[in-house]
Each structure stands twice: as C-alpha cells, then as structure tokens.
Picture 1: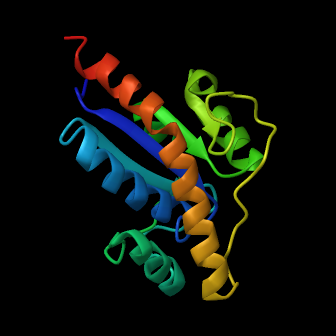
Picture 2: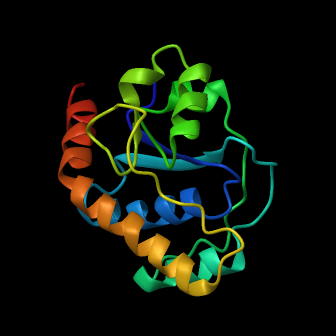
Length: 164
C-alpha cells in the first residue's frame, strides 16, 4: 500500500470544483508536507479526458495554481478504495461515494462540513455556466475551507506516513 496519503475530491463533471480544490490543496500541502501526499479528483457524472473549464483554470490563478493540464475522470470504486480522505462538494456526491466504497462512510465528508461526516450540510455550488466572477467566488470558498481544514489534514497525513 502506498505510503503517501491519498486525498480525493469529487464533484459532478470533474471540470470545475474538484480540479480547483485539487490544485488549491496541492499548493497548501506542498509547503506543509511535500512528497507525503497524492491528490486526485473525479466526477460522479464525468467523462474521461476533458480539460478543466476555461473559467476554472482562470479562477485557480488567484493562488497561482495551474490546472490547465487537468483531465477529467469518472468516479470509480477503485478511486474510493484508494483514497484515505474524500471530499464531496454536495450531498449527492457523498451518496455516490458511499455507494461505491465499503469503508467510504468513515473517510468521506462534505467539504464545508469536515470533520463532521454527515451527508447533510452546506454544499459548494456548481459554477458551471456561470460568469468568471462566480468561479472566482467558488475558488475562494474552496480555498477558505481547505485553509481551515489544513491542520487536521496535516495531522492525518502525519498519522499515516509516520506509522511505519
């Protein structure tokens, strides 16, 4: 099993919210725990191989995050099983994550509700089809959540990577 701590972000199409979250957390963790983590993302209704939307790419630049090389992928049971921590953007994402993974309930959270793992709570709204300003707001909303969760994420990484 991988010694790296694997974090999975899940949204619907894997072209907006989850790639932005993936890029934002990578920037935060590269400063805290370089080489001790892997961050991936997927979509509950995603097709494989699509880029992040133009506005998601632009919004991520707020933190100098480059997600221009992102390629979408569908959520699979294998990804759920591989992940140590899973963040969904909405209740429907959490429901699908938990349907796919036997032990997914203990490691899946609504991004805005972490560390409470109830599937009910405030969701990160999908900016698809909205103007760039809405994408910027979504990116900052995601970044704020991740910044707030960072100490707990670092603790979880340390617990796994220092265990052996």
